[in-house]
Image 1 (spheres, helix red, strand yellow):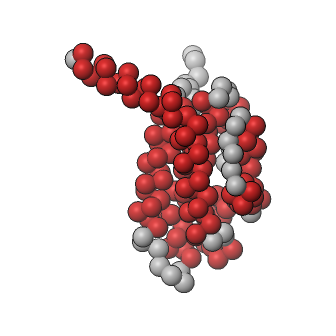
Image 2 (cartoon, rainbow, N blue to C red):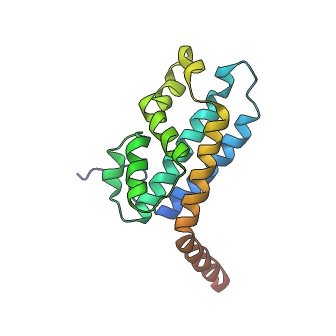
Length: 161
């Protein structure tokens, strides 16, 4: 009996990028639901934003030839993903790179998911938003040529049908 593939193991960088885009859009909508002075109301935004960032970095690593199993072993470690992404050409502002490191060091993914008592200790909303947007724009730019090729191939296939 063969073991089933791990979800996402066979996904292309473009598919992971598309998923990241959807989480980024969801984060933008969830941000509007948060209420000032109520940190827990920002938790759904935070979780979606952090997950989108993780997916963008994963898409770039896959695009640059990293093995999906090695990426999965990083778990939710944004510091390690960022380090690998920087090695393959991602250029981030120092403030953004430092924020990605602090997201891992402060375990914000876990705090956001499971630690309502720690909600007030997480990074500022505007910093998380800025980090998400910078990662999204810069990763998209780096993998854009292959995204356009996939879109063109999809359009050509549709035209033949």
